[in-house]
Image 1 (cartoon, one colour):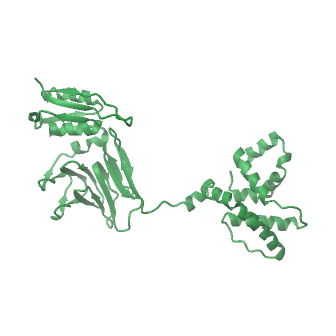
Image 2: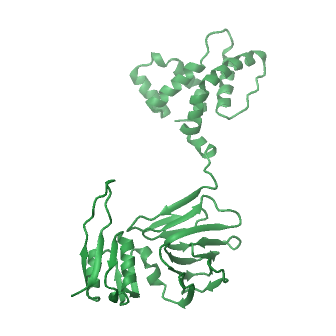
Image 3: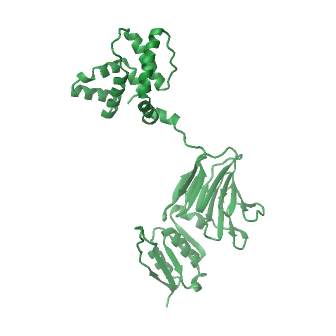
Length: 354
């Protein structure tokens, strides 16, 4: 449908509105088709016309139409009305009283029913804080206000403002996220994990930092970043591509190593890649991905190193394959229903094979 001001100020359409009650059903249908108007939109236009139309008062038709057009333009916020003659001013005053009666429905239409207005009237708060979380078992992609792409692993989240400030781009991460940061030499991005700050001007890197874990690792794939521990603020550590920072908060120990980056970022492509990883750490990753509890009852199995790659297997298939390398057996609890109707997580117990 055309803009309301275009229709109500169109002389031909005004004539249609005035004679609408005399039209046949077929004629009415043809009008709606020609003007692309739905039944409800036509009804609204008829109601507006009914409130705006003049009773006979002997005034020239040209003056009436001029006042009508200016008033509708005024209501729609298109032009400022300045009556030029006393006769027009009188008509304008009549219309102003009518406009006051119609102000609520017209405002509702102007702000919510007019797509052209929606773009200029509605503004999201610039300081709105947004948090996006990847559901268990999924990988989510988020595009930040500056065009930076963030991939979130299962159960991970990123928090950022609706608009970045002119001199900073501050982002908060919990869990695992892969960043492809939009380049800006003047405005660095600072990624806060709760354990550290990562400063970057435009690069690709992976963050693995869960709040309940005492360690985190940051892997640089491309570009350059600096890493600063929040706990002791011992200065920035600069990474080159292919390097990974391992930081243990309990021991306040930081290690910088040259690594193969692929196992640390394969998750964003739907893979689980383990290279010389402790069995207990593998179980932690599986529990997070499949949103279950896994309890390692026999700690003598914890430090067994594993090399493995998985793509679409379910958790039982993965554990079955791992049991070929690690001598363990598993038992599983049933999902118990809570009072609120939800269910407990499945718990799998891992014990040494007898």
